[in-house]
Image (cartoon, rainbow, N blue to C red; front, side, top):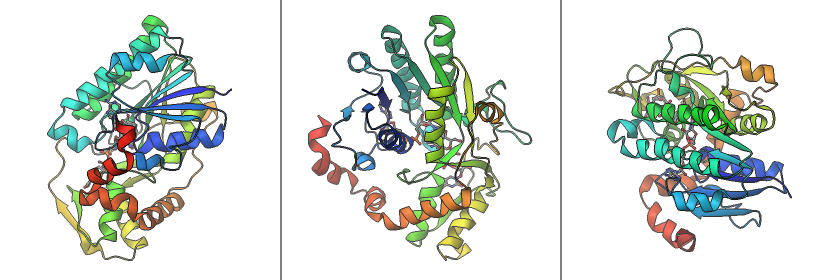
Length: 336
Ligand code: NAD
Ligand code: DAU
């Protein structure tokens, strides 16, 4: 019998990739996926795995104490991906970010404390450090989050740490940079722009397009989490970066070029409020432990663009708004 994983938010972008990753690597593991299926949760992301005998989907909220307590029994590894994840939405309406990202994490921590969970991985983000003009953030640098999203993630990050210090809960915290890859909701820069290019729609660049993000292929992120589960020290924080810092304009031009579309699809729009200029991580701690990403940006981005080009079935219904009717007809029985 392999390890028993409770993956929260496993119907989202990174969580679904992580479930696919571990189920391929550890055929005898058991996975329970607890997901509320917000607008970002999508059972299509795990269509190939949905009926696997070692996999169970549970439709529910991480803030539901009773449900979480039921599911926590017998869990070896808890990986908390569940969150409201989009910065723009947090600027418009932060409420759910506070509720899920902070309170939901609190409920998971409390429940894990009552059960003998072997490891609790809190998936935090590089955004908790805020913006940096030069140099790179180390794990010991102060947290200066600048959006309601990153502030709620910073709250959860430190709350998880406090449960390690106070109650000796076996917590490890990861702070990863910007992910890209298959099954990313088309509100985030790369899937939004690739699908817009495929539809000859405009590409709304915020501000001057010179904001810098460090891009990592989602499979490398999953690999790093798996590595940290095996080799990370309890109570520690690990930065996970791709080592690929690019301006938004550079990424956009790469995608236009790959799909053979003109630069005049780019349109400059008002900047995001509080828009962080640059994210940059010092990943030497994880490197010393023995992990580094194995995918190159150009290759992985080309493959990702190809994936969106050949999987229109996945994103067209999301963008057209026909998604909800389809969803009920496909997955109605799993939603009770
Ligand atoms: P996503 O928005 O694609 O997925 C989030 C998932 O969480 C969805 O399936 C949603 O239904 C679920 N969810 C939301 N609220 C819930 C609740 N109350 N109870 C149960 N499930 C709930 O997000 P993502 O991009 O896959 O990010 C996953 C995690 O990784 C988040 O914690 C995010 O902060 C973190 N992260 C993301 C990135 C990135 O580049 N996308 C980088 C670093 C860290
Ligand atoms: O850094 C990790 C974070 O990366 C994660 O914690 C978040 O969950 C994830 O959403 C992502 O946050 P960003 O704000 O960096 O990602 P987003 O794709 O929204 O934007 C990337 C950059 O592109 C950012 O500088 C804003 C810009 N942008 C984005 C969109 C959607 C545009 O210029 N136009 C757009 O339409």
